[in-house]
Image 1 (cartoon, one colour):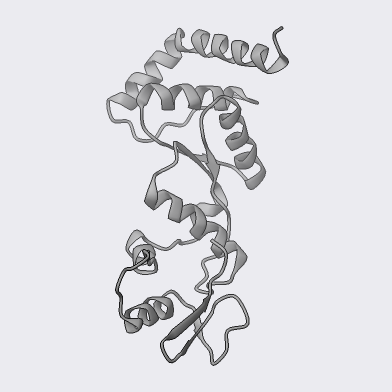
Image 2 (image 1 turned 180 degrees about the horizontal axis):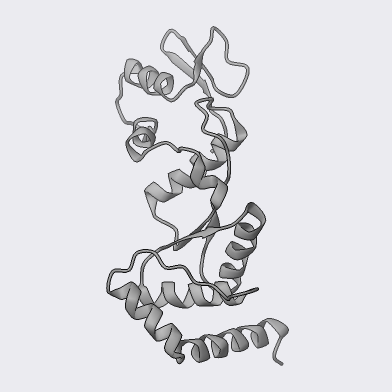
Length: 193
């Protein structure tokens, strides 16, 4: 018995095969392979955008950065890419903020942290997201601390890192974004990442 999902996969594979056979696709792929870093592709609508991008990403074997006009369009395009079997993420829009508890800044930091670990195959940026600054890779690495069981590290080093990460020193930890040192004990209430 063939399910609707199986039919959809067969249809998308057939559409991808037909797309790859067109002269326009072959020309676009060749331009990208020859170093054209930016291409503007017009005349596409609906999921045809995601189909084209998915095919290009697979054939090029490298991550995609795509700019969409708005947040809704970016979310829909990322979802369509996923439906075509290409992992994608929509980059959150938000103002630059040094506040470690700002929800928009946290969303952006979550995505940036994943970038530094392993770049996603596709990231769709709403145009508005390109207008606000984000933390650079060195800033993110300076705010990261990986501890392992049995590892020796001075409390002062940990205090410096959590302080540089924007956490607030407090006599008692009660809210996210606070830390306190009580003798040999360091309490941290980290914001969710």
